[in-house]
Image 1: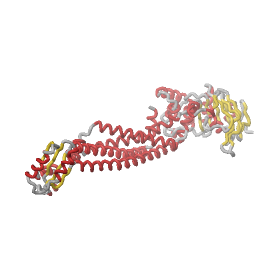
Image 2: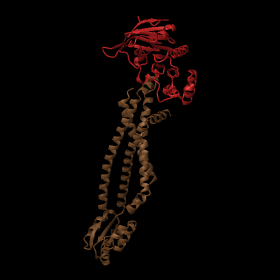
Image 3: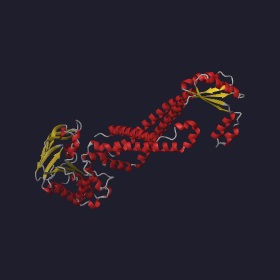
Image 4: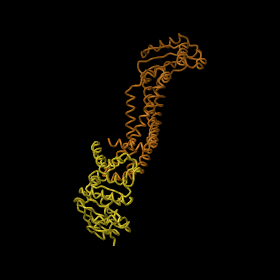
Length: 291
Length: 227
């Protein structure tokens, strides 16, 4: 296709501009893909907590197994409980050791005495958690009750914040990228004024003259979008073991990452790139090319 | 074929480049447009190429008033006209081959036909062996041959040449003129603006003398005469 040949020629003729444009686009689209991944990740974490109606009661030191059994009996009578799991101080230490097996300092600092024993209480539905927690809180041996309502509230808040800040950063990056495209394509139109005049005299149509510039902006943005996507996917892949370890059980809602999500992310990136590149080029053509 | 009907072109109230010109050029004619610098020769050519619109009057080419052409029709009109300039206006970053091919690429002709047509034209103009050189690597004569090849490869009905020999040594200027004569012999109308008295006087062609934006003389088999 003749337009592709023209775009290739334009890029070859000003390689540093092309490189600069693609790098700026890369930063923009790396931001966009990071934001999308963060948004998706936080959404999955939220889902995990919402799908697991579970409260954890932490006991004061000196709580006996009989105290725990009494609480279990009282709760069982509500008919809202599906399962109990008692985690003793030793069990808690075991879990702690397993999670921090690679960090000797953390292992040395903690003993079973520091960690509280706890009771994991699973309910039939998330709506049962609050009344169950209220019952447990009244027990004198219970130090604290944690249940997903708190976690979900914090996560919802965090997700909202991620969305607002992310949208702001992405909007700024996209605006900046459009301005960069306008500047670079505008500059190219200016330095090729004589060539454009010659093409006009040879009978080139407006579309024939404009299309390569339009495509050029799209190419820069698409290169940036592809690289941004590639790097963010590689980062998730590279840090998979670390994230799995850090997120614990929650990671099962994120990993393995669906190929559909990865391809969807690429599609969103490329679609946005075409829009950004196209808009920037169109604005430059309107501003600088008068045929 | 070409008719200027009482055409005036003003760039401001103070500058009148072309003043009430009436002129007819028949198909297949070879016309010299002579006159001092600023006489209005280039403006006439630019009016004909539809780069400028007349302030008053009309220009008819092939029975079409070109002032009334829609923007989308201007490229199609320009494909009927070939242009040759004193400074060649070759694109620096394209080879001889690519410069000539551009005239067909803008018509969106199939690639294989472009390759064949460019090869044929470059061989005809004896610059085939220069096809991979860039304009800066060419002599003046080769550059002008390339420019003429580009102008005529689309088989235009009219060739407008604005001082095509202005930057060339006398020998090369003659060869370019010979080339334009040959193109004219194929039936292409040629309008050539020039200062070159020697060339005009020896050619025995129609000569239109322009001064102060007006035609002061129009003679078949004329001479370079501005009086």
